[in-house]
Length: 349
Image (tube, rainbow, N blue to C red; front, side, top):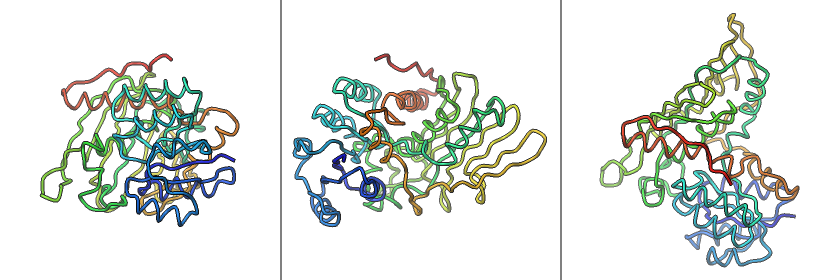
């Protein structure tokens, strides 16, 4: 039995981490911590566990084997490092951290302390994405030439536990980035996963177009990001992240290959639509993508617990996310400078 604690009790903890730990027969939820002590207390009573008074108190508890870190972006690295050094396995929500140096420090700390570090890039676990990766490997659409991948919804003020313009996602000190950190990290990681490739160049425009604070001023974090990615194997494509898709979410990916086209979560009736070069079509009905209004089990927690029990590597370990984070920070640099940025190879441990 893996005994776990959850640090940060906002929406992602409430709809994903806590219920998925409760559902896993090999995990035991020992306790919770949140800056909002009343929130932690209420949830602890609901789930019959302990409400800790501080992060340090939880990490000092020798009965806890692992923690989920579900706090604001700016605190990911600091608490992850504390937890790893305290001998805990860590499942950290995305984005991994708010700068590349911190991301690399997290990976090194996991290795030095002999602990698991997993990052919550849950799109790799979506059934259609897993099937699509298999089909690509089988050559279903030949070599990938171009692509587009999109994640857009109406914004965190309509979803987070602190609804409205005062939510922490709009606070640059806490969030560092906006739609790029919230959604862009998912699709950047996903395109690398699907293509078994890495981004080597990025040309990006990351900006704020519509989201406003309570005073009517544009928020300080981005609400839209559009990136042109060049992959190491030669494919090029676009990655779009947006908080201004008012009406319905878009979480689709389309791949254009030498033998056809693959549309993933683009058709409302089928999760994969494969269009052959001769015009023939094959449809796959496996699942439907999760939305903010329709949350289903992510698979992240189950994989994390299994990795701890079997002493294996989590499917989304820290080092596997570094290349995506390099592309994210490279895109921010590209947008700031107005130039294409070369994304360098991952660090060598």
